Length: 211
Ligand code: 2DT
Ligand code: MG
Image 1 (cartoon, protein in one colour):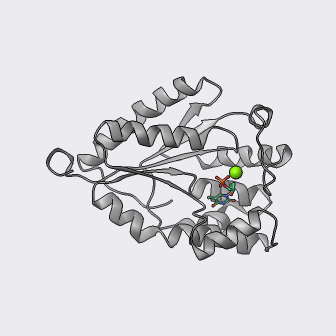
Image 2: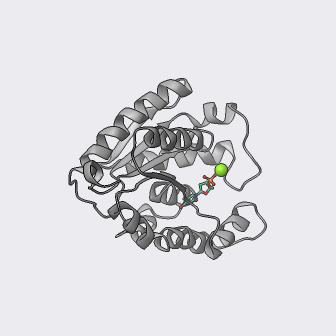
């Protein structure tokens, strides 16, 4: 709406291992913000609905193989193809709650052995999140929750490597959230942090760029 909410929206990213609880926390956060009168949209990356997203989806479901560098760039391009829309939404005052972003992009590719700096390079210039909520849980505990599908990266040994890489990506926007707590306790923390940043963005906090 106009008036009290005339400022820009916040870019809020949830990150973490598979089965860390990101998707349900994102959905709950978006509904909560809506009840608070905050214009909000829930997004996710990869965005599997685009042409590039369909290539990514077929790679993840092991229907196709791709060179590690090529798929890395495709994941990044899948964010770039949404860049102008992201910026437009934020400028309009819409807060975006995004399930995964560049941090997953770098952590998963670096876990395969690609150099961290090389992985970060294509992300440079994308809109930077105002807040990154990292749902912190051990790979063992996440795997113990069950529900890994059959997708390419959903294996305990690989998730352990991903976690090591996530640790190298903490930046100014990063907040660790203990993801071993109850769903409700996690959501409480996430709501508090999110409302704070929504207010800051609404009152003129500048949108930054990665990285
Ligand atoms: P979902 O399970 O959330 O659909 O993710 N991934 C994700 C990457 O390797 N690079 C990226 O840039 C992103 C956003 C993480 C599917 C898998 O894709 C991985 C898990
Ligand atoms: Mg998954």
